[in-house]
Amino acid sequence: MNQLRFIVLILTGIIVLGGCAAPQVKLFSDASDPLKESILQGTEKGKVLVVSMRGVISTRPKEGTLRTMPSMVQEVVSQLRMAEKDKEIKCLLLKVDSPGGTATASDILYNEILAFKERTNVKIVVAMMDIAASGGYYVSLPADVIFAHPTSITGSIGVVFMRPNVTELIHKIGFAMDVNKSGKNKDMGSPFRRPTEEETRMLQDLTDGLADRFLMLVARHRDLSETTVSTISTARVYLPNEAKALGLIDKIGYLDEAIAEAIQISGLPEKAKVVAYRRTVFPNDNLYNPLTTRSNIQAKPLLDVGIQNPATHLSPGFYYVWTPALGL
Image 1 (cartoon, rainbow, N blue to C red):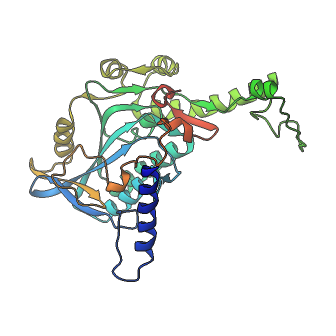
Image 2 (spheres, rainbow, N blue to C red; image 1 turned 45 degrees about the horizontal axis):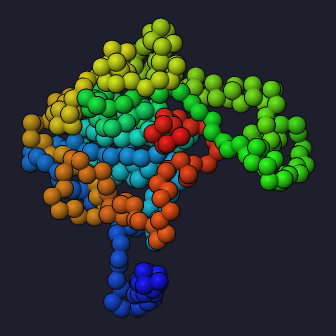
């Protein structure tokens, strides 16, 4: 009870402070704060811009208890637009730590990164961290060089169509869903009934069509043989040595080695500036900080029921995602 009273007092204080005309108290940095350049290392002319892509790739804003933050797509595109105006930026280092995301969000980021490269002639290096699988690999394709950390997981080049199936549950509880539809396939994929054989084939065709696009782009960007494309079409994941042997990545190394590569292929001096865009000033900022603002930090829910699974926020749909990383 005391804990509940404390929470109520805190929330009341926030509301009161928010309503005060002066002085205005800002409790959290947020997406309305402008992006500003932060120098992570280096002093010489020319810049390598580090852009972090961490988490599930989505166009959906990140909603917290007291604030809403931009989606990964919005935040990355904002940084690309800002970088395009800075002629000192000669290389983009994408720090990818993602199991993937929705098919469309992954494709949007892929296209935005590729278009940025074509408009600016800026070199691109990818540094894979824990996971750069499925959509995390998809967005890496425009890179001139792909680095993987020695313990990275990559691959999972394929598509999954996820939707709930509650037919057994509704049978047990005696629930029924009445549906009027204009065509026999209008409710195809409904969680309230099992698909027909025809619908199963149709859904598989859609899934295979998206997978074919993924494989086509990988083959084009990585110049892979038909045999290799057939091998990776199983959508399994790989450790860096296996991925390198298949031609999915170029080099295995640490983040500082990826930075050195970015400087070298861009023709920059050895101590060129390495920068990132932040909405918040971080003391002792460095390459391993994936945040643009402290508001990126996930707040502990007021009611902690022990659910920390990002899959609980996924809508039914087609995903370029490695599902085990989501706990599925």
